[in-house]
Length: 484
Image (cartoon, rainbow, N blue to C red; front, side, top):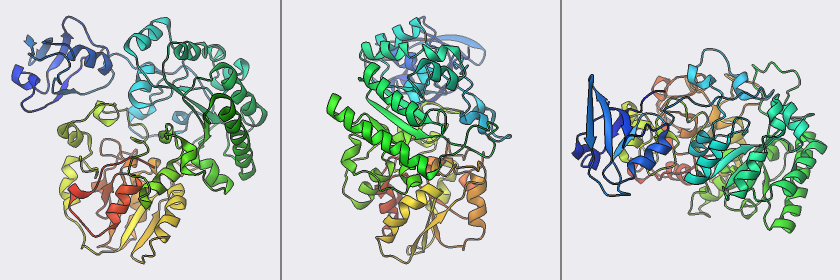
């Protein structure tokens, strides 16, 4: 078990006044060793906590004078202090198995940890969930959680997960719902495995066994060029249409039975099938926005000014790795933690060492190119065309790094963006969505400062894009937002 290390102290906070400093290793708080940032927040929320710390080879005790509920004013350098609970399933479609070699080591860690589900929205299969975990989730109200269902038939689920516990581990889902925990589910549909009649049976099983689910995302299988499972392949257009038919039929049944649609198909299915996206009001509160549900309509609504609110937040892929809670943990972030994590509170993201790049801008009325993935280009194209401007264009980035059917903007990497920008003219404004960055880096380890052209990194939402396309203003006038 590693010790949490203080990464930041807020000036004038109780932590600073008590003498805590960045670099302090926290051995215990009021005698308890915190196992993760969740427990850390419970402990530091108490009045006058006493910290046992290691500092420069010395063991010290520091009491922080504060009232219960008052902010401590300190950030730690990780979200999990003990060992991350790894996944012991062997799903054929697992994207971790489809990563190319040579990426940073942390990206290859395959987790199945309910704490990361609560903290970052990672999906857990519950195959390693225990009675003690249930007790903690219920007592500390760790809600919402995100559960990979894939199939409700025990035999089919065990086969998909390649784990005999897969068939009965959904009993924990039933228990979570019984205790009033908010749970969002997911079904990754693999052609020929859990589509068609199996998908129909799964949605019936959800209605029969888990009608209290808050939402269920039905998403397509992602297949990279490094996939080694011959049975795993992308959907055809006809298969995508059939998935939509099944989901939409069940939406009506859910609406009639439990009062809301419950199940939603990912935007990618509509793109694959060549279908129009459902209207904004069909997505409810966009609960599964981060899983690719309703992103296009939400983005369009924000871009057009029809919606003043942000429909969701997406930190990007692999956001929990290599980072402190500021990258994905659901808490109010300080300006200091935002800058350290790579996101300036104005909504333009960058590493602090790249802030100078952001402020050195091309001329005010320079032509603009919006960098985006292949799916993003399909969504943004009509929006940009509606502006009737000849100085704004879409710059599509094909994902050669992952290959296969990987076309989302969140998986764009520096190598592919670099290749596209190499032949582009100087002096233009190049807008890059922050969803493809993790702690200021692309997934291949490159930074925006490594690119051959200056880029402006903007929040990946419609309002921020529209603001970036308007006559240039100061950084602080561009609003922070959500993601597509």
